[in-house]
Image (cartoon, rainbow, N blue to C red; front, side, top):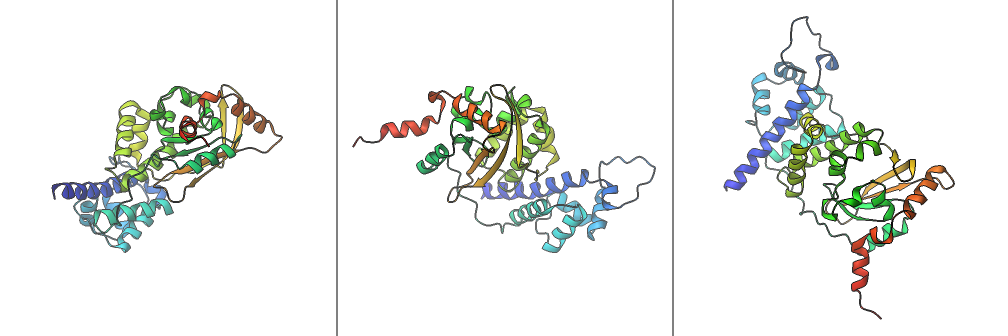
Length: 305
């Protein structure tokens, strides 16, 4: 019972944190309010301004933000989303947080598995020379083909259990030079983790990673505090790779059917282009011993016919 009360309280507070973050990052000008010349001590909107825009009482809104009100109606949530100019993803996140706080959220998803099915590993090989990999919901690298690992220069130097794309972006010294738009990349990364942690804040796979990055990366801590839950994904990504030079690849990420949160990431380039030639070089530059070790180990364990 104590654990249930703790989880419920955490859900109440997460809803309030999201509202507070969005309120303080929404300027009066963005919502059509006229601001006087006096000093404003509060960044963004004041509580009473947001309450007025949403058509609710200031007392009710304060209880929401402080986690003391756990059952806002759908109409209240919609009004807050409109007042804060939330996009579709932010609006949906607000609804999910409210559902969890009200204790009528759907059953939690099964714990994420790190096991990648053998046919998926074979699929990664068929995608060569295109870099491809499978990641967990918290961005752990679970399986890869040679280019999929080599594309993130220096990631292979880390132990397999430490290979995580969020950890790489913030803590690996090569990441800032690999991505010319590093600022854009990290904003999208944190927004994705924030959205996951908002609806499952006690999940060990997320809390461990987030705790590490909060401790080790001031940039991560700053973006985490913003509580953005959406990030625009670019169809094309440019890499300034130390081994093969500059290459721009088309990227695609998709959920893998029947897995708890695993995603397949694939990069391609038009054949005959310099980008495709660089991709071929990248695939060929990886020693055979640096490929997907788990796949070869499983093959070695198969009985001989």
